[in-house]
Image (cartoon, rainbow over all chains, first blue to last red):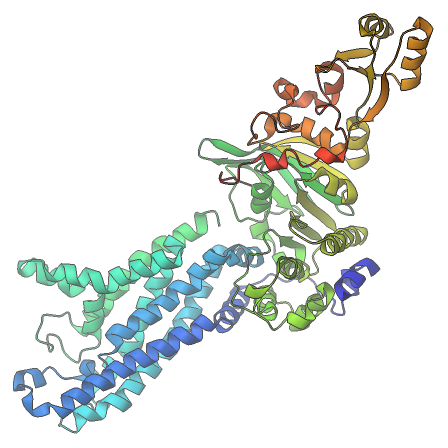
Length: 284
Length: 355
């Protein structure tokens, strides 16, 4: 065995590449490079993004096709709810999968013990946390834009042929498409935060499902105006509001797109800040 | 150079590491020896900045691990060969680490060749055997060509060829002037590789000295004597100033004398001898004696060597133990390596341990 022979012969220093250069302090740049190499080199990244694309675009197209085929049976008031958010409807479901990607980039490191290896290579935890967060953000923003525009191109025609205005020259329409990428990204960051907080894939994914799907069901039952106000700000409804061209267009009360963005940002921070603090202080 | 100063780590009510002071110097293999649960892995995790000490601290070349400019270029560590994402190929795993410290890609190829993983470099590490995983871990440790290497139980579960490879590698690394710090729960393994020994038991440093001095001080020998006229013989041996220990099986253990001297006494007095055996206790026994009071989990009463009587002795008294303690050499009749793993089997598998 060659390893054996070489080790007996004596010296790792005989390895062909020497690192004679003076030791240079590693920076955020190295942490980013490493995190990018990490996310690219596991298959779960590819699969979660592909599934998210298929679910988001597929459901959007399916619903668009059904609506288009039965256009005459849809009431005028229902038709009035069709804006860009209807075109990207599948994102409400696809968001779970990108959220899972956010969970997995952290929880698999804890699950496998890779986190300890990572921290040995880059022990400045704050920097490492920010690098990982940045890399996930970049990856999901790109994926989100692909999902948004693919939905627009494939599901949009079912609406435009019945006269719905989806022109991207109209700012609210463009904003709604960009909001798809922002929504997916913020939910993925919430998944990442849950991964840090719970350090366990199944637990963090369950929590994410709770945040996205279960909380709105519960708040939906809250009575009165207080109940409606609370219901508006839960993550999925705040995210939904971001993707609408105007508030309340869906028929149920929603925040304005900007307020929806702010609400979702606060939700993300509520999870991400404790995750950051705990990651820096907890034993790995 | 690794330097620990009053290093303490508390998990709830339990002290995993208790005011540990030790220094690991370059140019030699320093063995870090202790029973399971003694605090070896905890200490190593603290050295690497993975766990925070409750108090005290440890520095590497004068700095805490987190302050190292490019950690992989100064310290290479193999704590747990399974601490890799099994879905990543060996090559990519090393590449991820190389990038984190700005190391060139060529260095990844170099360490892959060094550990002999070339043929499986593009395979996902999840399918690796224990030996291959260990090699991958060592490749990662050597990636930055570090001056300090740390291995936690590197030979555990390896086949003889793998064990030999790792032993030779550690010696070669030390010969190059690097600091090599390797933990083990097997004295026999350390005796083969280590130049210096740091012994830990229940979180406390019990010994920190060169291997040869440890051997000299701890290889206790005695002479086992059987005689049908022991009632007459024993007092006469004691008169010579030798320590005579009555054993339950009616033999006696005589310290500080050699068989010739005892035989001469018996012959002079005209007493019959049925046995006169020089018993050299093994290093493994010395280690067991040293850590007797600090083994975390004992097996049931009959586990050989797990519960020698000198457990009550102050731990610092180990150097003098053979003179004072009844039954000090532990295991009557089976003094050699046959017993060496007695205590390591004494841990119930279902108990959680902190290493």
